[in-house]
Amino acid sequence: MSEEKKIESLSDDTLEAVSGGMSDQLRAAYDVNKGLYGTGSACTSRLWAAGLNPNTVLKLADALNQYEDVALAVIRGEYGRGQARVDALTAAGYDADTVQLLVNNMLWDPASESFQTRR
Image (cartoon, rainbow, N blue to C red; front, side):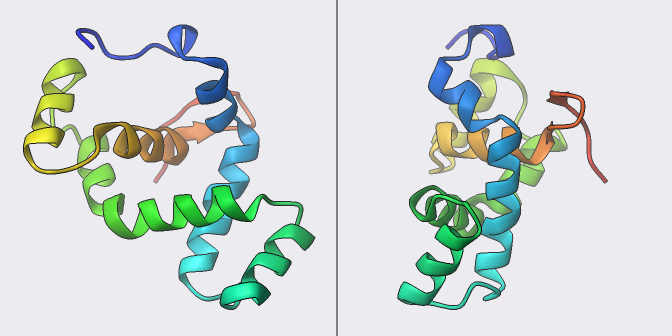
């Protein structure tokens, strides 16, 4: 990828993943990691009851465990932009696509349907 991805060029699946619904799932992923949904089958049942897809939320929770710090570093610009970012993340042993998906979810604002810097 020689250019940084633009929202218009992302696939439908990726657009769905960074939509407002995913922001709810990201919040749920943080709550899962805090233990607020319980563990095991209780966690899965509570996620379904909350109208969330447990598979997606749990994958995102795992990504948070592995990549939250690096995603925040990406947001701060510490890994560069575009292909340089992909190369730097890959060289550091990170899955660049997973990191970027997490970054997108951290910055997506469903109210304005745009990416925002959050504090």
